[in-house]
Length: 246
Image (cartoon, rainbow, N blue to C red; front, side, top):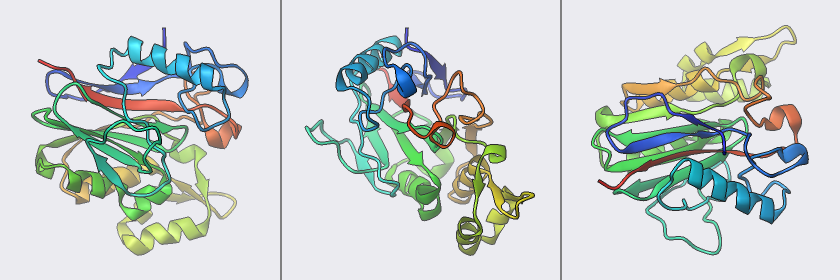
């Protein structure tokens, strides 16, 4: 069976969310074994079988629209399935029986649901998207007010493993001086960045008060997670959310 981690948040009845693990698939080599990314060099047949296993194990009611993620802030709403994956870094669907999904291997996946479960969304928040506002754009695309939205952080690279240069530190702090709280200078004169802390700060500033998850590290946990920074060539996990039909 495909391995997966269930989201630990008080989602409304019928909303299912979580993140795939790297175990339970058929891929070999650096994609071992449940790689769900079709863009990383793995064989198409292996990815197709891995996705089939993932959808079956997690009881996803319909295959999600797989995005072509470009580290931007575009949010697509209720997209149709198409031969070419749409370029976007967040997806929002309304109603039951439709799933949202984003792929990651160190970047931060953030899942959303309205308190009534009528809207669910997923966002891919690497540092570029986080800096430029992909989370705020996702919240703005939802009709529920921020105070009635829940968010969950899937596994991402943690602060002790995420060294960045002064230019990234300065870009965040220029946008919001309070971002400095989420950087720690290391012995090399560079910075350790806390994606979880930066994302939580952004969501709270956008009006969310119900933010859950965080604390896992894709880089440190080789057994469960892919990590691009650790391995370079590697697979991708999928973070997903959907609402079951009544």
